Length: 194
Picture 1 (cartoon, helix red, strand yellow):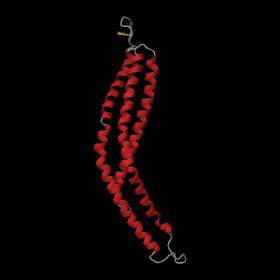
Picture 2 (cartoon, rainbow, N blue to C red):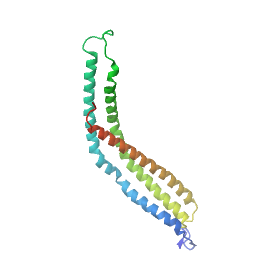
Picture 3 (cartoon, rainbow, N blue to C red):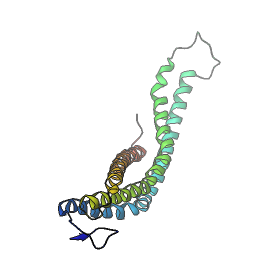
Picture 4 (cartoon, rainbow, N blue to C red):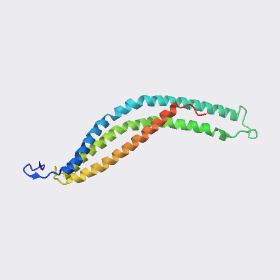
C-alpha cells in the first residue's frame, strides 16, 4: 500500500500490474541513457581515424581518376586546333571516367558531414531516452496508483510517444549514416575501376 502525494494520511491502492510494466521500461531507459551518454566519445574513437584514412584514400583515388580522365581527353581531342571535320571520336566515350570522378567526389564531399551528423546522434538519443524514462515514470506511476494526480497520464503518454518516435528516427538515422560511412570507407580501399 502506498500513500498519495500531497496527503500522507490517505492510503491508495497500488496496482502492481502497471508498475510491473513500467519498472522494466524504466530500467531499460536508465541502461540506454548510460550507453548514450558515452556514444559521442565512442563514435569519435571508432570513426575519427577511419574517416581520415577514408578521406585520404578517396582523395588519392579521385586524383588517379582525374589523371585517367585527362589522358583520355587528350587522346580524344589530340593536340591540334579544333576542326569539326576532323573529329572522329565520340566524347560520350568519356562518360564512364567522368562518372567515376563525380562518384568519388560525391563520397569525398559527404564524408565529413556524415561523420559530424553521427557525432550529433549521441546527445539526441540521450535526450530522447531521458524523456522516455520521465514519460515512463509519469504514465506508469499514475496508472499504478503511485501519484493519483490525473495529469501525469497525458503528459507521460505524450512523452513516451514523442520520445519513442525520436528514438526510432535516431536509430534509423544511425544505421543509414553508419552504412554510408562504411561504404565510403570500403570505396576508399578498393582497387581502381578499370
